[in-house]
Length: 79
Image (cartoon, rainbow, N blue to C red; front, side, top):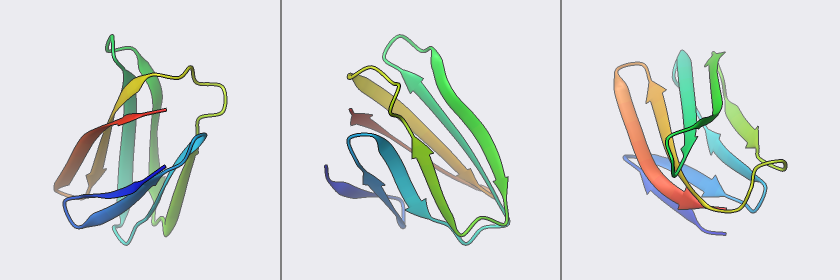
């Protein structure tokens, strides 16, 4: 599973997780499936490494949105 940049942020997509380093004071993450259903939503304060486990999530295409302070990063990925 490849890593890719969303803006300047390197995000690694594994078969069961999304992982990225973070140096912002807060990070808000939302993942939705192809039909727009929210499968993950969370906020971390002073994070350094964020791992979102997706073991129980069905294979398919998903949309990831990460808010780091005033920056917003987004993109599609496939499990």
